[in-house]
Length: 277
Ligand SMILES: [Fe+2]
Image (cartoon, rainbow, N blue to C red):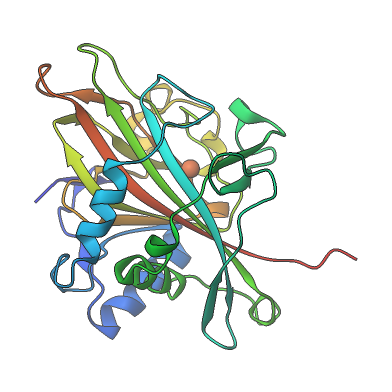
């Protein structure tokens, strides 16, 4: 069992979401603390029908981040829409700027100072992966932890799905996430699910109050940090309610310098789609 440190207290416990009581507790934590750490496999084996293995295989063949080539970041991104009143999810078609393979647009607006105002495009998830049972179960499990106003529940919800791998192959090198600082994403809810972690030192997650956005966690007094933990086992997960917290993931390094280090995560975010008239 990995160690989670929260407000200076080791809590080494992470709930899975197999019972309704735990689900309500998780929902309560996300609403009141702005974040929740949990096991995402719903109490079942992660590989009972091959859907976990399909995800692992897709992560093994991720293309390099086109905005970060050679720096150890690999990713795909696709977008979907949930109609809450029908409990229906539909994947959006790829954008028109597709060149070699289908692409999805991604715009963080002012929330990523490394790509201010840049509308990036990333290779989309393959159609067969969009149908992956485990991926869809995770999306719905995460969505069921979110909370919305009655007005929001009458609007479609945008779902962003990132496959993100940090990989180090050069001894002594490192791979970093963007932005490399405490930040907020802009989407009201983001969930992170570990798919794989091999030969890694680092990849430490930090949660802090939103006032520390823009700072590196090392610049904060330890007491100012809300939680510091690592995702170690497959489908260990955490989620944030973005307005209440800032978050960060640290650089990935090799444990054994003769082998690559890899950290693969699924990121799933939710935002209401507002009508612009
Ligand atoms: Fe983020």
